[in-house]
Image 1 (cartoon, rainbow, N blue to C red):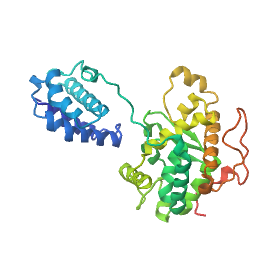
Image 2 (image 1 turned 45 degrees about the vertical axis):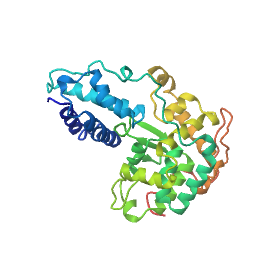
Image 3 (image 1 turned 90 degrees about the vertical axis):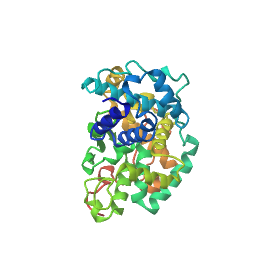
Image 4 (image 1 turned 180 degrees about the vertical axis):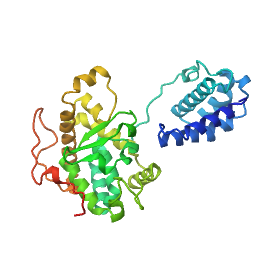
Length: 337
């Protein structure tokens, strides 16, 4: 390999067949490389590649059209490509060894601001419930993501076999999570009832599919289709990740402990904190989700699922949720009706 473009194209060919990478990662890397890196610096000889030329030929032009974090991702991908090429003996040496984004950018890398705030929650719940009532198949995905704060890629890989009615849990296998560790979410009476409403609305072919979020033909909904659905439901005002952020930021308002909130969205807490929470982690997750779903009920969520839960969201510590109505264990049937 003699030119930067050769290294990039070789690396992309490996990334695109790497099943440990998410679909969104592969798409974003392909877009960055093909639309920005290769046009600007693809023909740059490796023997001439240094920090000055990297900044002049690539990073400076990219800063004119992309956010700093996108430029940072491109540089990180380049660094990874060169490390891999050097490790396999495809290039003699790594011209980017020791190079970091801070060598070229000193500003603050601020996270993308959320499009939804806690002040938007009442109107959002009303809107999502209306979408679900009009078309449960369309409205189920955003409601489930708001209810649990899951990532869209993890949510779409849900199978009916991952939902345990006897244990009242939804298990997301380690292979499906960003953290690569199993994530177990308790199912509240509200969600069990919502699942029942959703199953009743599914066409027969989709009902027989092993996938919770199936499309015509019974295959799993693709991530691109899910994002398109979100854009349609939101009128492009917010994304699936905004639902996750809103759920997490709202937990503090209803008295959920910080560490429990982090566990609910499957953030890594560190060995010490997770050891401390191990004994009663599931009980605390269940209580937190019960509080959150009761809060959503106060804003109209109950109109979508139809379950009767007689406890407000703002529970004093140690309070117990008392369910009124049908038994939660039998809310979801594996047969139609």
